[in-house]
Figure 1 (tube, one colour):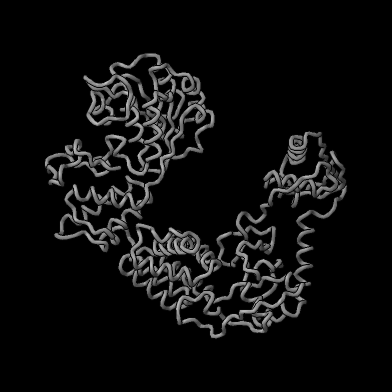
Figure 2 (cartoon, rainbow, N blue to C red; figure 1 turned 90 degrees about the vertical axis):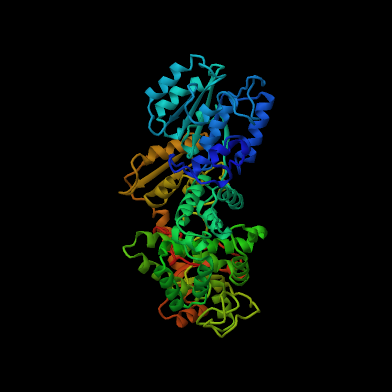
Length: 617
């Protein structure tokens, strides 16, 4: 949120002159708060829409501003209030966004002290009594301004009764009243309120824009900061202008006592970060399977003041960026990356396949949480690196199956598929030819040493199904429940009930001890609602069939036993003595190189963590 307009230099500190030590210090986030719509950065769509609306006279009675912290919601609300009440002694008497000069109400509005612009923090005024005050006061005309404007910050904090009390006034307010709401949690605002407002989504500010903005402010403050240091601040602010200005304020204060330029090393030390080049070196050690070198590098970074959890988080960001380099052409144009980082990143993106990057991401994501919650963060991070280095040396399932078909079972990964350098432990290249797959191997296995990851989405999520008009089986009902995405009801029908008898419109069930209360009524009501026909669900004392989950387990065990007798599967188990068959899946897609192959999980009853490194690619 820049304020580089010369007319505002008295607020910004003209030309970077030294501040008056006798005056109270104003932080940069307040000192450089935008005074006009032209000063807002990164919100071009919002500014353009508001400008057109004011020029054509299409001004709404209520606005809803939403976005993450620090992107300018409250500032935009005050600018809208200023535009609504903008007036000059010799100027046009109408709302306008062209506010080049200071109007008679502008200063008081921007300083939040105008009698007709009432700001309320909904976090501390949540009840109906607070809203009742607004409802009673809207009847009175403004004292001096054109409109009486109510700015309600963090509006999602209002209670249900407060929202309901506001609805009528919000829909048909007096012509002299305008409402402006701001929130970081738009989903918590009732749709009845949203439908009465014009919504504006303020987006995160691009890192490149933040760097340019911080450069201009540092110049005005008379601070000499390296461009790389400003890039670190912009990256750490995560699109929040206020967060970035707070960090810039801290960096200037840190370097104010020393002569010369504020460097990137000082900012890294302030933020608890390490050089991105060292993060790349650490990742390369891991991808080579060199756990000793990785642990040594982490210890060196820790000794220089780096937080182990931050190191893991930085490495996760690196993996994400490398993955984007493989998929998005313009990802290499990231303004926060140096030329060295771009070169190394492009090299890693060309060398590592998607499965390895996805596996590294899963393990790092879980590792960050482990390091943050562990009593010894360094020890937890060490163990994460050891697991990653070990996994980096394992073949992926498709490589394993191809090697089995070729009669060559590698002890480690071929260097052409996943290694990051010449220190690969494997000496056997992967065969280029892909032999035909026999039908038993198409129904292949997953071993303890190379276990598949769950596919995207929850383990028991089911795709939308075509539900027949007439239900012949109980499974058709379960299919309808699955298509309606009622996961709790679907699980109860699969695990907690036994079918006694079934016909269209009538179901007799024997309930297990863990069946939810009211399950029969809930199922009957929903089936009637979904099909438009009456359904009766009765509770029977007779013994029913096996549950769907029990039948699925028996079928899965049969497939495992059949797969275990296959000669090629036995060859795999012989090569990996500690492994065992834990699941069976169709490997045709994996052999074809399909990264989206749907892989079954070992047990439907088990709660599977999608980020568990033991459930791997």
